[in-house]
Every structure is written in C-alpha cells, then in structure tokens.
Amino acid sequence: MVNQKLTATEIGFTHDDFAALLDKYDYHFSPGDIVPGTVFSIEPRGALIDIGAKTAAYIPIQEMSINRVDSPDEVLQSNETREFFILTDENEDGQLTLSIRRIEYMRAWERVRQLQAEDATVRSGVFATNRGGALVRIEGLRGFIPGSHISTRKPKEELVGEELPLKFLEVDEERNRLVLSHRRALVERKMNRLEVGEVVIGTVRGIKPYGAFIDIGGVSGLLHISEISHEHIDTPHSVFNVNDEVKVMIIDLDAERGRISLSTKQLEPEPGDMIKNRDLVYDKAEEMAARYREQMLAKQQGATAATAVSPEGEVVLTEEIPPAVEEDIPSAIEDEIPVAIEE
Image (tube, rainbow, N blue to C red):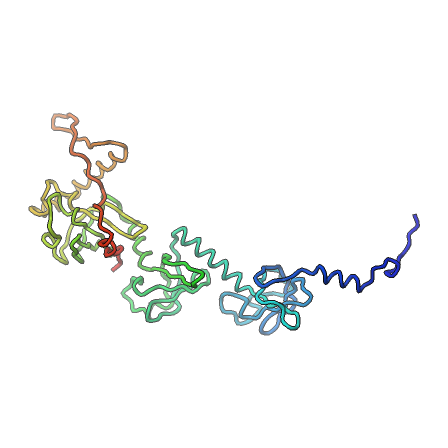
C-alpha cells in the first residue's frame, strides 16, 4: 500500500467547513443546567470558568456560596474542576453567568426536607433577633424561631451567639419559609426521660372545664377530667386549685404532638378516694402504679383480664383492665390543649 498525504482541498473538507460543523453540533447551554467546569482565571470579584462553551463563562463573587464570601479564592482554586449552575443565558459577548450558590441552595432545601421527614433535632447558633423571634442558619439556609417557640428565661437579645437545639415546624421552599421550634426540642428531650406508668410530682398551673394542666419538671401534662377519679366529677375546680402540689401517673406520651396524659384515677385504692381521701391516694401511689404497670404488661401479652393471688394462694380474676388513654376529647376542645410547654 502506498501512503499518500492528501490536502484539505483534495479531501473536499476545508477548515471553514470544520468550524461550521463544530458550530452546528455545539452543545446548547441553558439556564438551569448543572454542568462541569474548570476554573480558568480568578479575578478580584469573580472567576472565569471553562465549561466547553465558545467563551469562558463568568461567576460573580456573590454567586460563589450560600454563605458570605469576601474573596473568590476562599471558594475556588485555579484549575479546579467542579459543578456549576447556569444562571443566565449568554450576554451580548456570548458569555454565560454561573452560580455555585444555587446548587448549594437546592441541596440545602433537599437536606432540610430530609431532616424534617426524620423528625431530627438540629443545633444552630442564633445570629440575630427581631420583634417576632430569632434567626438561625440550618444547612446555610436562614431559619426563623417564633418567640412563642423560644423556651428560655433570657431576653431574646441575649440569645445572639447561643447554640440551641431545634425541631422543624415548617419547611417550604416555594415560600422560602424555614420555621423551627426550640420549645419542641426541649419538650421531646424531657419526654424521652419519662415513662408510661411512672409516678411524678407536679404543680397545678391551670384548670379548664375538661381538666387540669400539671407542670411536671418544666413540661405540662393534661390531667383530663375523666382521669381524676372513678367517681363522677362535675368540674376539676371542685378537686384542685391552681398551685396545688399533686401526685400523678403518666398514662400516655405522645411525642409527635408533644402531649403528656396524666391520671390520678388509676392511683385510687378505692373508687372516689381522690375526692374523699386524697392523702391516701398519694401514700399508695407507687404501689398502685406498680399494679397498673403489671396490668398493662399482662394486657400487652394478650391477657384479657388481670389476675391476682388470693390469701389462700388461689389465682382469681380481678376487674377488667382499664385502658391507658384518656376519653375522646371533642375536636373543639382539643384545639385549646397546648403541647407540653417548657416553663
């Protein structure tokens, strides 16, 4: 075979033809695309990026990060390759504008949605306060803690710089709303230390027609009127006064709604003792609570009725085990019941 060099003219394909072919098949870059790019040149207020377009694209310093950047070299290094978001179409010079901030922004919202779905507790430092509450940053996004969800005796202004545990209340990327609760995080932490069947000492903080709110170590539980005594009670006011110290048993912990249900009825040695002989109820509280826990365990194991041992050593059936939940509360009333509140 004879090797032979052919000129472009002989081939019939010139350099102009090749350039036209490149133009024909040039990749079209559109705003919203995420593309790889290499840092071509770092400038005082931005950087030139090679993304394979005809002209080097440009990223301004304000688009380099979701956080404040004072100098481009805090984020980018020469010849570094990474992903960029195409922010705007070509200008009159054929140059595209890029962004890293938009990529971080999208991924930050994806992350906080995941954290909310996991019901995670996050920690963040307060960087500012206003009349409505406090401002924090979560995954680089600005979040807001309403004043009603800040549980501390400190004035809001003194919270700046303090790190707080937080739960998510609202995550809405479309409305750019990230709302968090300090109170709910503290309540959950305290609730994790409590157990159903545990006897605790509390203080009556409020009385409503449907029950009394009892402060137990900084969180509030509801002693529903149906759980005060086995005997009928017209109103909780006939049994309790605000600031009364009481012994109650925890019968339900609803971490999702942040509510604690309490009972003194389950502590009564005899029906009506909360009305007739409250001191006896308190003296026998731990004993009655232990019996209650045994009944609950038996019920969980599939027993239909509790058993007891007679003085003669015979096993006898006792009364049917009472449920460990409060009676249904009308929806109109339930709306008034607050979640367990950190004092």
